[in-house]
Length: 110
Image (cartoon, rainbow, N blue to C red; front, side, top):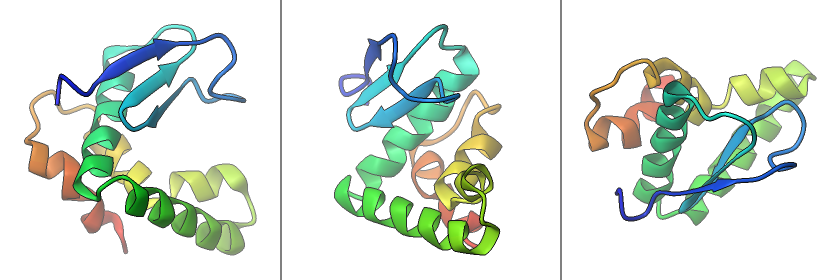
């Protein structure tokens, strides 16, 4: 996976209060990217690769829209996406298997 990780420092992207975003195979960030943030984004890389990229984005948007209808709050909807819940839960663990990074989100479905 190291060959696929391409870090791109930008000034204005991602937008708003977010400071990093993974769009396979790139990690875009503004400001400083901490080790924990890099680990979080790396988890997203493995999630995207495991789901062959396009299905990941389709599921991500579907989860976000469903959560937005339920919570009526964009940030709460974002935090309830299984991919994000998994990445936030695992980002503090320095030694993770690729399989765990890729499929742990299934545990966060319910």
